[in-house]
Image (cartoon, rainbow, N blue to C red; front, side):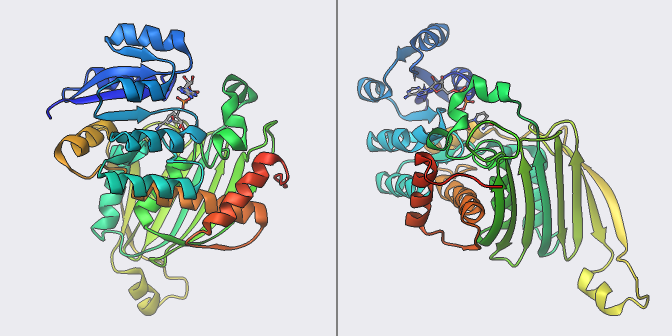
Length: 373
Ligand SMILES: NC(=O)c1ccc[n+]([C@@H]2O[C@H](COP(=O)([O-])OP(=O)(O)OC[C@H]3O[C@@H](n4cnc5c(N)ncnc54)[C@H](O)[C@@H]3O)[C@@H](O)[C@H]2O)c1
């Protein structure tokens, strides 16, 4: 197989971007699109020489496809992915992988059983600055990480939620800032730091009319021994801040303009002249500081393969996609754990109890449990 025959389900926002990228991809072809919005599907299909469908199941049955990209509201990620995998197709599903860890589990298991690629739209892993950060950590240049401080803050006015009502409900979105915007950040945190083992969080809705959380604060302990403290909110001005501190160095990044684009492009890296532990043991001054050599790491001109490239290569060549289902399941587990900890007001250990989380989400959906402040 040299050309991946692909379809896209959900073609308004992110799905349109996927469809257009597929149509000009050298190793893939856009064969069909499916969307409840039949007029939009018809127009896009005509532009791209593909076939339109209103019903994605009819498309799965009627087309001879290799792969499907799913870019629909979050609650549809699991049922649509399962149907496509069952039909023997490779799947790239937008982030988050699902709304419940129990669903993500079924998706990963079915992909394994069917020997199909399951990739997830965590495209922030492909941004040059994030790849550079990962490389610094993986090659030990920061030493073992001790502490991470991470903030993603960017306002989302009511107009944003009025435009897309599905983003407002537990049933359709599965959460607010955690599931929607900051699923990228929590995915990056797990990608950089590994498996979380414990979380203590506060979640609330400070200023919005919808039922899901607009703010989350969490302290996370990782299997590696690292601690992370995160603040995520859609109330307040744009601020993207990261500080990663290790035994050998520190990374510092702040941006008040672009919380949601290809960041970080430039960040500061401080290398300690000697390991921190050594300075703590041997410095003769009571307030002795580590000697730090600072440099600007500029990734703005670097180019990296896209998430789509990585998915197409994985399907055609058997390589590992940059954001596979197993690692995206871990990111969702952290999101679910933060919600469980914040709503039930308790410390949550991993692995997250799947039934306990399902029960919580069912209560939030039915209105039996509501967010407090
Ligand atoms: N990776 C990124 O950077 C990024 C950016 C934006 C959105 N997303 C993700 O992409 C997904 C879609 O978000 P969006 O902003 O494009 O949403 P959107 O509301 O703009 O588009 C969703 C589309 O799905 C269609 N749809 C809904 N139910 C359907 C069904 N049963 N069958 C077929 N089509 C159906 C809608 O008609 C709509 O066209 C979400 O998971 C979101 O989190 C990812």
